Amino acid sequence: MLTNQYLDILPEIKQALELGHPVVALESTIISHGMPYPKNVQTAKQVEATVRENGAIPATIAIIKGRLKVGLSQDELEYFGRTGQKIAKVSRRDIPFIVAQEKDGATTVAATMIIAAMAGIRLFATGGIGGVHRGGELTMDISADLDELGRTNVAVVCAGIKSILDIGRTLEYLETAGVPVVGYTTDTVPAFYARSSGFSVDYRADTPVEVATAILSKYDLGIDGAILITNPVPEPYALDPKEIEATIEQAIIEMNKQGIVGKETTPFLLARIAEQTHGESLETNIKLVLNNAKLASQIAVEYSRLLNIGKGGK
Ligand code: PSU
Ligand code: MN
Image (cartoon, rainbow, N blue to C red; front, side, top):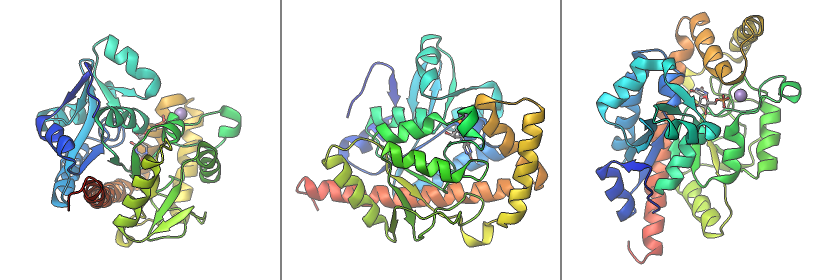
């Protein structure tokens, strides 16, 4: 494990990593920018509890006063949720400045992957990743998450590609970046609120151990980058694709009218869609994150078992 002078790893997590026990990284932008208070804090705590119930140690990642934190206290989770959008949304480009200025930062998928990899964590659960935005072929609004997935060695479990994005172009970009897109118990890429986008996955897996074996092969072979595991939202919480599409289109029109661009787009759209669906999309979002935390933990348990077998253990 690589430790460095910028990193603070909670003792419980550090010990688990040293022993090769399962650990699952969690992001903090979803807390500060992805959900409203107090549901964001409740969800963050529930997600951590879910990871524990499934045999792994949760490591929520954020930056506090310039320190890269791997594992947050309950008070720190509360702080990130309550302070919300006033906390900087931190992606790869922002890390050096937030550290140098000793500020707080809520880490996106990209930034969380970087810090997780520094700590030696191989599994990461989230809701949705960033991607190529609709119109991205002209605006070039392509999330730094995609390049990160192409270079940093952390497997990411998400609920597919959100339809606020251009799903087809996001998948093309991932192919170019060399990121395998795995469908968990599905042949088609899930679309976050909906269980299918209609696009085919690269590989299907039906058990956590299949995914863990592929992760181990990738890193044994020295092939850098992520494996993206897409996990469909549980059926009872899935939203009707046609209805959600109409809501998304309306939200994008409003976003363009208000001139919202750059890193504000995803938080704006998520909040607007939640408002328009009277909180239904938020409930779906919470349920799918919990479902992803469970799967990531199950994969982490298998990964840890395979690693220990490799080391001559059982
Ligand atoms: N999708 C969600 N909820 C989120 C995000 C995406 O459903 O909270 C956050 C994640 O942290 C992701 C980030 O990494 O938005 C992507 O932002 P951008 O497109 O600005 O890179
Ligand atoms: Mn962007």
